[in-house]
Image 1 (cartoon, rainbow, N blue to C red):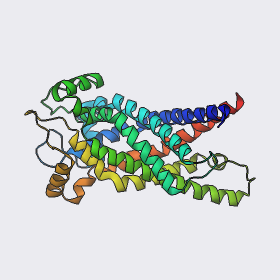
Image 2 (cartoon, helix red, strand yellow):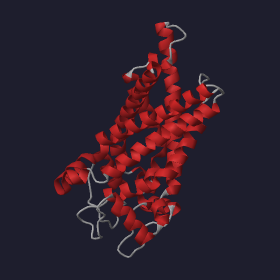
Image 3 (cartoon, rainbow, N blue to C red):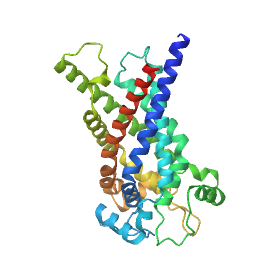
Length: 317
């Protein structure tokens, strides 16, 4: 590979990272209240809890707004923005590098299996980098006026308190289901996205009878990206949602006795199945779908359009 090709590929990787980071920020800013509601539904197992009982998503939003104000609806917003921006930036960066590594050249289309491997690899690396941020986000979202425990004042205070009270290892609570979630969810979503993208591109190519040199990006518009992002996200959510519930329950703050409610993933699974049945693994899925399906559409619209802009800027340099 020549020096110019190497430099071009490096720029392309960073363009993916920048586009992903911008997309992640836009997504979180638009949908965070639904994320708070989802988290509170996920950890409420119907037994003794410091959390209020909500009837449904709308009731939860109005109840939080009434009792806790805007601050309650945006609890954990900063770590959520930070985590999402870093996660999407790293994800697209690692995903782009993996795809590039698996293909012999940038123009070669990857098989579904290699798309799956690329997404899984990116998901695992991102999860290991960002788990402490998501842990703090979950704990901040679960703080309510009913809590008797000393509240965390923010991201830094939460990290400091967790390390002091529970040790460094506590920052990686929920890492096992998080890894399964990140790898499987990302793999399913991106594989579905890429395969559906191929179908739409092939259809539009035949319909328009464009020149064979026309790129895929020229054939697709924001509506296409919204449909692709939303459809792939639904498939990923339905198949991987139980991992989210398990992770959220493991990441709860220990009780006043200093002991966690659940010891490990297997304990969560047994207790959830015993007391709540199959439905317990899908608690909070409604606000999750309401949040993530449009969020995925926003993410991919922003990502693809920012990527187009960056590539256009590079061509003009």
